[in-house]
Image 1 (cartoon, rainbow, N blue to C red):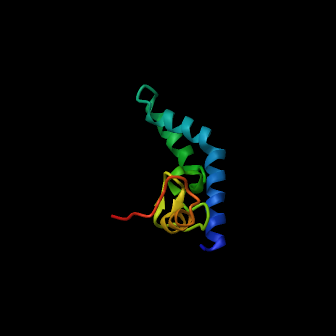
Image 2 (spheres, helix red, strand yellow):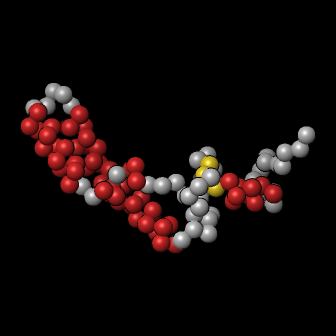
Image 3 (tube, rainbow, N blue to C red):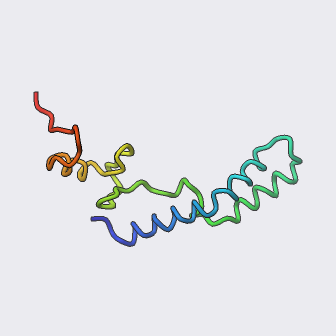
Amino acid sequence: MAKLSQINRNKKREKMVAQYAAKRAALKATADDMSVAPEDRFAARLKLAELPRNSSKVRIHHRCELSGRPKGYYRKVKMSRIALRDLANFGQIPGMTKASW
């Protein structure tokens, strides 16, 4: 089990990303639009830099839904390899069996 503080910190970042998503997208669109005056694009970049760092989507770390483990994460099932293996061994995941040949 991962440290609870790390899990909570990541959840806080996810909330903040959702909160600032529209504002961040609008500022990025203005800053990247070449038809806008350079002064306005620069002002948009400054406003973008003033937003909280944790409001950036890049700062979210993928974690296992069951254990909170940050490494060995499968995006398709949103679980770590260890949790996935445990559920598969107990027959909790339909269609997944242990390999044998």
